[in-house]
Figure 1: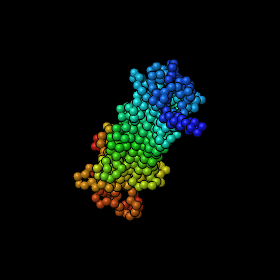
Figure 2: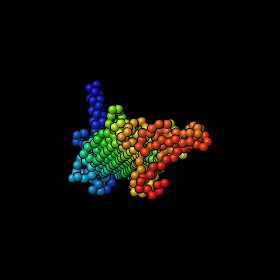
Figure 3: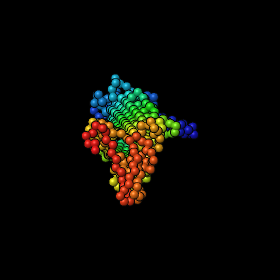
Figure 4: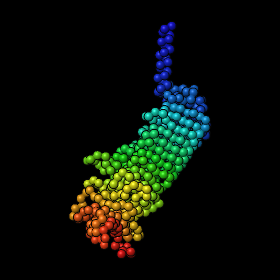
Length: 481
């Protein structure tokens, strides 16, 4: 009797071990959508013992499906329909190749909980259509993938589902690419979102919400090439970074919806290359264009283009360390509650800082302090052939610079192509009759160093404070005084 009991225990242990490692698949025998909750359609891979599963998948089952009976080209899909509460260890589509066909998964009102990963495009092509319902994972190790490390490509379209995973990764396979389109619903990375992790990844956001409690990287690791186009989604994250490290490229085009990077918005970091096209309003604490993470280190390179249709808020500072801020008629407003130099144009010897174009850089109306600009680069009012202004005169009250220009240096202020530069205003704090001030450089300098800055000596009829408003005109303008 004791031997019999011991044998039962061993068999029980063996069965549990097999269940933890079991790979299962779904066969849809007819055209159309095969529902997850049809027990007879579930089978076990031969490597895990073979045969029928005889139940629905559970927390220990790794669902791996392929296009032999779930090909979109044949109109066949695995569907989680309304009322179905589906569970698995992990889910992967595109496990095996079948005549170049694409494995299809649909979320049609039900709920799928993966303990670990959800993968569209594991080794081969996968497609997911998320109409409604919820899709989530439980473990901190898990992620939502469109394209995974096996080399597959994935396309996910979300029309109204709620997606919630520890990480969201679009574009993981070195030889594949991932795509995500959101027309409604939501997607949340409880930690991070990566678009273009180590390969090509793209996201087109037409509606709904997108949230990352930590980082949102567009171009994450070497080989990562990410693009995000926001046409109407509401995006929130702690840190938004385009071009995270060397060997990466990231671009965001923000056309509509809202965008709030609560702490930092970095464009080109630590050798990465980033671009940010601003056609709708955004808010961030600090906007940094081209930066590095150590000294010595490698600068990233970035370009931010602000179009005429947007008024944007920087609550801390904007730094153009190695790259270009291109103003195309837009407005950047600075809150400046805790910093003095709200606009920093180049702060490293090996950086190149350029602010170019037309538009307005100004104080946010409800801000507590007036902003300063630290200019150790080039500020160029460029009308691009039309009489346009680049204005810093609205409450920017002082200029500093930290990198000496020298007698042959080019750092300073310029106006070209019918542009007009409106300098930061210069105020004199004393109540004297005779005042000395620099326009375009720090107000107390004896000799200004920036190109197109000048020293003023003014004697008033009576003592008092006064402000200097300066303008620099391109020589081809028609309104030169």
